[in-house]
Every structure is written in structure tokens, then in C-alpha cells.
Amino acid sequence: MSVSATPSREVGHAVSPRSFAMAHQRPKASFVGCSKISDYEVLGKLGEGTFGEVHRARSKRTGSLVALKKIIMHNEKDGFPITSLREIKLLKLLSHRNVLRLEDMAVEHPIRTTDKRKKPIMYMVTPYMDHDLSGLLDNPSVHFTEPQIKCYMLQLLEGLRYLHENHILHRDMKAANLLINNKGILQIADFGLARHYEGEVPVAGRGGGEGRRDYTSLVVTRWYRPPELLMNLKRYTTAIDLWGVGCVFGEMLVGKPILAGESDHDQLDIIFDLCGTPTEENMPGWRSLPGAEALQFRPRPGNLSQRFKEYGSGAISLLKELLKLDWKTRSNAIDALKHPYFRNAPYPAAPGDLPTFEESHEFDRRKFHDRRANLPPAPKGGTVGRGPPDGGHTGPNSGFNNPDGYGGGGGRNGVNGSRYPRNRGPPPPPDERIPAWNRDRGLPPSLPPRPPPPVDYGNGIDPVVHPEGYRERDRGSRPPRGGGLTGAHPVVDTYIPSYDREVPRRDDRRRPPRDDWDDRRHEWDRRRPEYDDRARASRTRSRSRSPLRDPHRERDRDVYRR
Ligand SMILES: Nc1ncnc2c1ncn2[C@@H]1O[C@H](COP(=O)(O)OP(=O)(O)OP(=O)(O)O)[C@@H](O)[C@H]1O
Image 1: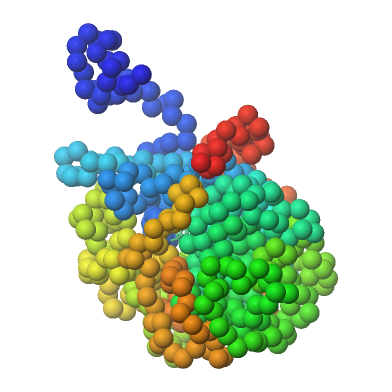
Image 2: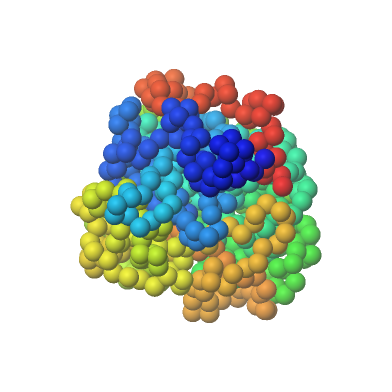
């Protein structure tokens, strides 16, 4: 029954759909899980992503700290972004201690008298986490120990095991998407690229198994993207997320991203340096991948053992399992959790035993950089533009329609620096943390380039690659490494890491070498009752109601099958 047909019958004369909807609004109290933005006190900006801007806030109702992720409407005509819908839908289904919990949605309506913006702004409300792993690794005063790295790794793998056994591919595993709080808890965040996975769930001893259907290979931020995606495998499996875990593990060990490719082509080249060049033995079927046809390279054995020798044989062995070129035998999360690395001394720390650190998020990176003497020259890579073309009504800086300083001006606009020119706005409000690379230039906040939005809409059809969606990043600005790859590489240069050459290499900083890093683990629940208490009090649904444990709600997931 159409909305417009009903009112005519009910009221006996033509009523516009809007009037009908207004007359039939549900009482506000009947909405569960949707608050007003005024229920939160906004405290400061934490980061900006492709699809939203993230702010720290306090719930006026519970007093708890939360993160508000604003959903950016890049193009209002397209309506609510499909990626945000996916993220919300998935997060509502998930319930695991190592997966970020969606507590609430908050809506901000435009102020009628002054605000020309017609559409409300939506915010996702999640518990506030003190750090993201990328920000934490950038803090020169933070030094992970091996027990700490083991603790984080175990938590990361537990979270991923849960996702995979519930048929969810994350597809953007990277340090910036791993949130950590000062209770030692690590949570996987950012489900903007995640989707339902139709293949078999991983089984112990059987790697990632076989893929069952095609998906877009334009996923995963480049530095964390596995070789099969770089060679355009479409029928991929949960193994793509495990490659990202391997990259994050290496990053925690050495303190900086281990595979920082400057283009997709370069990315493959440095992967081959580390893991060896592909053969039918170590990567069966690689030659038939669409992106492999034109590849030519000088055979190399790989230098992983050499590069990581100071971290010991256990770490090397786990890294080799996670960074296997062969996606079919690459370790799955179940097997990685049983790896001897975690059972040998030094043993994993308990989350509650880990030290606490100063807050660190994307926006704090410069804070740490500023402290360093003799910073290397600013890395290459554009800064993301700012200043929404619509005057700020739908861009990342619209919203919080009050004079608290978040209503416009600075901030990133859009996905990609090449698409939106920089527009120097007024200085940010005092509580807003300016990214390092802007602070001393008096510019409003912005971030380094980000991956473009996902282009897989779940229909299995290859996406059209929008040329503006991808930045060319100095291809050919340096000679190929190590005799590298040659040939016309057909792969489009795709995802730009969220923190790239703008950020000085971590090892350039005067920081003692660390032997380990990464995620943490559970058992924290027992040790940190206040965390759970707060969580329980503020949750909009209980774990027992998680649809992942309730077959009657399986139909929700059908959305992702289509
Ligand atoms: N719950 C939270 N607590 C604290 N900080 C958070 C929280 N959620 C997000 N952030 C911060 O905001 C940043 C961006 O968040 P998120 O990755 O969810 O956004 P995105 O738009 O999907 O990003 P991307 O473009 O990387 O995919 C994170 O890296 C983190 O620094």
C-alpha cells in the first residue's frame, strides 16, 4: 500500500505523503537505539574517514564517553550511503568483545530558521576507545613489549575468528581500524567495506578454503592488501583479512608499516621482496590470475627471515603463516590462535596488565611528530581537500548545529584529495586536534589521502572504476626495487593507505627499536568489570539477542547475500 493512497482514504481528501507521515509519526519513545544529537555533548574531533568524521562525545544520559561517527552524504541525490547502511547493519548484528559495538544512532535535525540544510545528519555511536593502533604506534613514548604484542594479536585473531565464522569479511584490516582502550582491550572497527561472505567458514587446518563466488578486488587499503587481490583474484576468501593481520603483526614488531608500497605495482614488488616471487609451488594458480599475465620479475627467495630475525623464530614462523602468498593455505584465525608463538615464553600479557597510554588517534599523529627533533621532510602524498562544495551542509563539517565550532569551516571534504581542492577555512575550535602536517601552517584539519569508497554493491558484478576515485601516487618516481616487476601491469592503482607518506616513517624517529606490538586479548572482561558494567548499561541490545546467535534473525543477513 502506498503512503499516498492511505491518507486519502483515511481523511477523505488528498493529503501529501509528507503531511500523512507527519500526522502518523511514531511517538519518540518508541524508537529504540536512535537518540538526538543533543543527548550528547561533543568534546572534540578524533579522526576523519572516507565515510564520516569521528568526534569524541559524552552521553548526557549515562555520562559515558562515546565516539560519534558522522555519516557523510557525499552526494545527497544518492541518498544514504550504501556503505554506511552496510556498516550499521553489520554492526547491529555483531556482538563480540573484540569487535566495536554500535550502541546507538543519533540524529541531528537542521535548525529551521538558520540552517539551509534540509536533511538530517546521522551519527553512529560507539564506545569511546582511547587509541587506534596506528596512532599508538606513532607515539614515540609508547613501547610495546612482546607479551603486549601477543596479547593484542590474540584479541585481533579472536575478533577475526568470530567475524569469519559468522560469514563476515572485513576487507579493510589495518592498524588504523584497530581500536584499543586503556583497559587493554582491542576491537576491530570500521565495517564500511565489510560484507557477508558466502563461502565455507574456515576450518582448523584448512586455511581459508575455497572461494565460492566473485567479489570486487578493489578492497583493502593498499599497504595491507594481499597479493591475490593485487593480481585481481575475484573469488577470494577470508584469507584476505589474515594477510592484513600479518601486516599489522609485522607493523607492531618493527613500529611502522612493513609493506608501504607507492603504487599497486610497487606493492607487489615489495611483497615479492619479502615473501619471495610466486611459483606454482608457493602460490598455485597465480599465473592464471588476471593481474598476473603481464608480470615479469627477477626470481627472489624472499627476505622475511632475515628482516625479522631479531624478533625470534616464533614471530617469524607466525608471520610466514599469515603472509603466505598461497591464499588457500594461508593460516586462518583458528589456526593462528593455536600457533606456538602464543604458547612460548614470553607469554601473552593479560589486557589488564598492560600499561596505559596517552590518547592517540589519527588526529594526534602530528602531536607526536611535533615532538620529534629532526623530522624528515614531509612525505609525499597529497593532503585531502577540504570545504564541501555545498557550503558545508552535507559535508563532514556540517552538523552539531550549534555554535560549538563544529559547524563548518575546516575539515576534510570527500574521499580524495584529487577530487576536492583545498579550501583554507577558519581555524578549528580549540578542542579540535589539528593533524600534525597542518598545525604549524595554521590550516584547519585534514588527513592524508584515503581509500576511495567501496564500489562493490554486493551484486558480484565488477565495479566500474571511477578514475577520480584513485590517486596516482608517484608511479615511476623511483626506479623499481630489487630488479622488480616489469611489463604493462594491468592493475589500476587503487587504494591509498589512510596514513601514508605524509607521515614520517616511524623508524625515522628517535625511538628505541621495539620487539613487538599488536593487539590484546580477552579475559580482560573479568579483570575489568567496570568496562562491562558500563557497556551493559549503555547497550541498546543485549548480547543474548545477537542475531548471529539467533537463527530466526538470519534473514537480516540475506540483505548481504543479494
Ligand atoms: N569508537 C571510537 N573511539 C575512538 N576513536 C575512534 C572510534 N571510532 C573511530 N575512531 C577514530 O576515527 C578514525 C576513523 O574511523 P573509521 O575508520 O571508523 O572511519 P572511516 O570513515 O570508515 O575510515 P576509513 O576511511 O579509514 O575507512 C579511526 O581511525 C579512529 O582514530
